[in-house]
Amino acid sequence: MKTLNVNSRFKFMRKLQYIFSALLITSVVNAQDKPLGTEVINVVKPYTPSIADAFKLRELPSISDSIILTKKKIKYTIFSVPVASTFTPAKGVASSVRKGPKEQLYNSYASLGVGNYSNVVFDFYTGMTLSRNDAFDVGVRHHSSQGGIADVLVEDHFFDSKIDLGYTYRDRDMAWGIRAGALHKVYNWYGIPQEQFINVALNDMSDVHQRYLGAEVGAKVEFEDAIFESAELLVNGMWDRFDSNETRFVFKPKFSIPSSNENIQLVLTADYLNGNFNRNFEGSNGIDYGYLLAGATPSFELKKDDVTLKLGASIFYGRDTKANDGNLYIYPQITASYRLIDEYVTIYGGIEGGLEQNSYRAFVDENPFVSPTLTIRPTDMQYDAYAGIKGKFLPNLGYHFKGSYTAARDRALFLSNPMDTTGDSFGYKYGNSFGIVYDHVKTFSGFGELSVDINRDFTLGINAEVMKYTLSEEEEAWNLPKIRGSFFMDYQINEQWYAGANLFYMGEREDMFSKNQLLSPNDPTYEAPQQITLDSYFDVNFNVGYRFNKQLSAFVKVNNLTSNTYARWMDYQVQGLQILGGAIYKFDL
Image 1 (cartoon, rainbow, N blue to C red):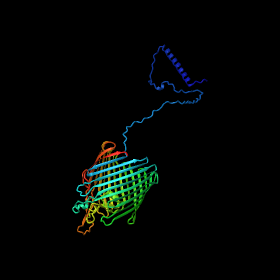
Image 2: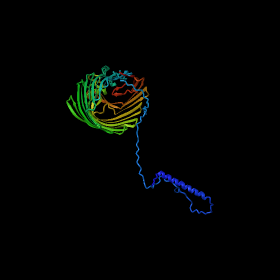
Image 3: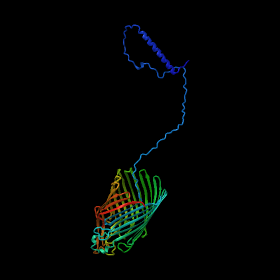
Image 4: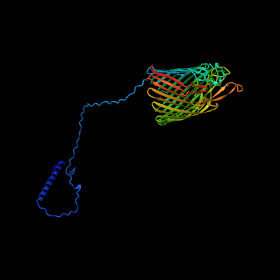
């Protein structure tokens, strides 16, 4: 039997439909030749055609052949021919950014200012790079005045100069440096109680000046990725016009075993102090002093995420080398901090302590009007417990609040020396110098600070601290304020003009005035000591400057703007309104 494929069969059926349609039309046409009769047609149901009544051809007609052929699988193969491409992509070009002029840096500068009271301020610094690894720097500072404070009948000029030299070397594995310095200071004990001039001849008080000379040498070495992390060495000495002398030696090596989140550290300390004064205040005997402080501070520090925890302790042995007496001290070294909300909230706290070395040089730096008859000994800082919070209220508004409670045995306090006109006439014996007394002082303090960065060109801040003291023997915490604060502001007006201001507030302090205290209370010329309250004061300072070019600037500074002749120490009034003008020049050496 002959088999037709699908297309042939479909064409065959179409031909049958055409033939059948032609026969039907022919029969209808022939039938119209006959006359039509009358017939009655009864419509039982109206005709409602549907889609099913229409004749439809199947898209896929069924096949009823007895033989079904199996379709042969056809495999298609793509013949790939490599074609050389001549397309070259264009290189991307970064958008151009307008660059500002590169600021030129200079390795040296010099500043000179001159003002009333014959004030002269000079500052010089240079940091020269000798090679890729080493550098040398020099710094010189000077401030002097010829005096002229109202109602002061003796010399009140001063002179303060210092020079520093340094050399550093650095490579991949280590860095080391050495430095040396010298100082020269001249001050006058001009704070003589005015009412005492009527009792003492002025020619007896003409020699009231004191001169200090000092020198120091230091060295430091640091190692990268080594257990022996660093070491510092400092040797300094100071002498004065009355043949007093002092030498101090400090050596502090540091060992560390760091890891990713942990750090084990050991700090060793050796601090030796030796000095003498030719006489005590009574003028009878000299004063020799010497102390050796040796300590070790092991600690373990853990840093994980936003938490930093440090656990440690300090063990010190303090020995009085003149009295051959020593004691062992143990102090806590525990600190912790937690960053609660990124840069907005960080809380911290701790409890620390230590054995602190006091020295003649440190006392002179704080109060140059001390007498060369001091009693020197260390301070046992038993503990300093504190807690605080810092961060930002707003992106440009920072804050810092802290509370602390400290206990210090043998804390040094400045106290006015008595006025003595019965013995020798040294320039510091007219109630115009200060000695040191020691007491066990507990201090509770609260500190707060706010800082605002309006923009890159304008910043300001304010802080205040309140203290409350508890003492064991002394009546007051002599010359320590119960409140102090400060305010500062810096404003970059434009590329040429800049300005700044700062204000300091010091609360009331207490001191003691004693006359002829060396006499017996039964002596008819003996006068009981009087407690003196030093008034609080504001010190307002302002400065403005103008840059002529990248190297030369001019400035004007106004200190003690309100011309408040307050007393920083008892009977030591400061200079009034001070106006200082000068220039700053930057250059390369």
